[in-house]
Image (cartoon, rainbow, N blue to C red; front, side):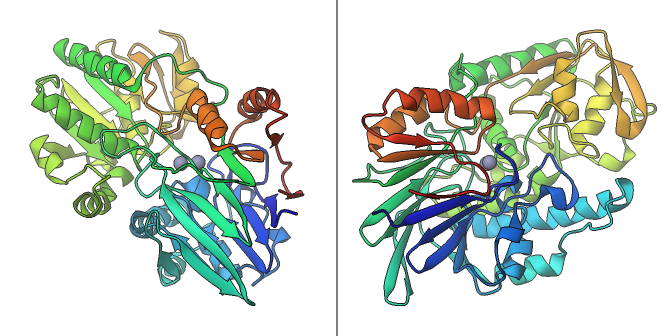
Length: 456
Ligand SMILES: [Zn+2]
Ligand SMILES: [Zn+2]
């Protein structure tokens, strides 16, 4: 009989608020404590009511994107005895990400009339840090409870700085959770380093890209992006690249630096701003300590990066100097972010370009803008400003997630007894479910319902 039981505490079957309860023998622990970026208020939280207070031994956080980390201060208060196991980069990045969340929630409290905001404060983040216990990649950590041992090993998962896959062993049984994972190398970070396991009871697989087939290689997409930047600058235009603060901005900075050395980056001012820049010191520190990280704050100097002062920007009054490159968070053009403001200033001019380099949820301003036809009107609701779409809008596949073919092959090579699908929209899960169902003689596949317990 297997010794593992899981319960998905996400509030719905999608990417949302990642939080998985795992029980084995005497141990009860959580993997991730996310907040759904598509929801507001308490609706964004995982199903915390299913967890009695102080019923959890420890919490593992795979990485610092908010869909995995955002609810941690709340959970840590309810589960006050639980140690929090993280990688070294995650221990540095998590407080920065969470403090930024406090600021965002404090602003939204008034603006969107959400009385319960902020759901936690900066003191909660401070006390949280004391509970962090740092695990080194590849080195097992043993937890003891009532004469039982659970062994936890984190492996580098690529994806973003600090991202971890989790291997758990207990009483001769084992499970592996990929977490958000990328096998191929990025410019700033080496791809996932995962060994071949023996006799896995279950492999818990992220399925983010199950619904999309990769059409171009990463290198080709990078070349296409650089070519479009050169073309835009040559005609005197402004190029805006909205990018995720954690991972994408730093990755693009390294790409720009390498392109500059190869004379593939045009001469013009480059502006950066937002949370992505607040994370730079953590990236710089890790670049010095970890061989898998290729980043140094020197890059900012080499590229002569200029800071953008967001507050002075109003599309009715601001005239931006051109040509220029703006590399700004947020990746989905969320309201109030530097990218949102600059987009409002440049959309009306057909010399300009907006390059999306990651996934945009369809309900975000970024997702909506990608569906608008050229010359149609687009409204920046938050600024009460409508403008025709004349700038070129382009998408590039530079995702931090493995594509479905790589995940499928990885899974087959691991020979698990069971595959459990997670972190994907229904269509994405369906692709994997159908593919794996064809291997019914070798292993079973489970697409768990939220809130339901399963023995693995
Ligand atoms: Zn992630
Ligand atoms: Zn995620």
